[in-house]
Length: 65
Image 1: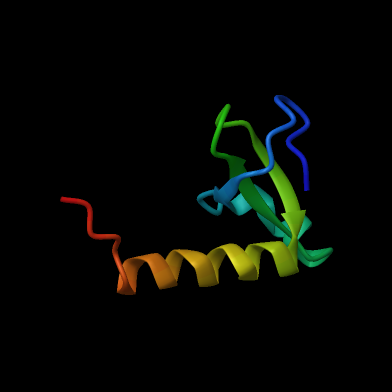
Image 2: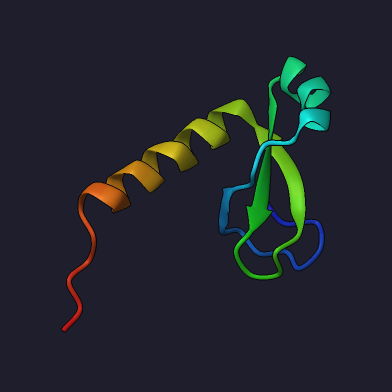
């Protein structure tokens, strides 16, 4: 997936809004570009992957000293 605004390829989950229900019905979930902060929609599988990555980072924070 490529950001339509800046052509970046790093995303995070965006906060779900009530108006997103229509998109969820067609298996699209709101995501946000990490570079330009543009909000768009990605496939449901991408959203599940991003959720998995977020959970992994919360359980195993990087140790920078």
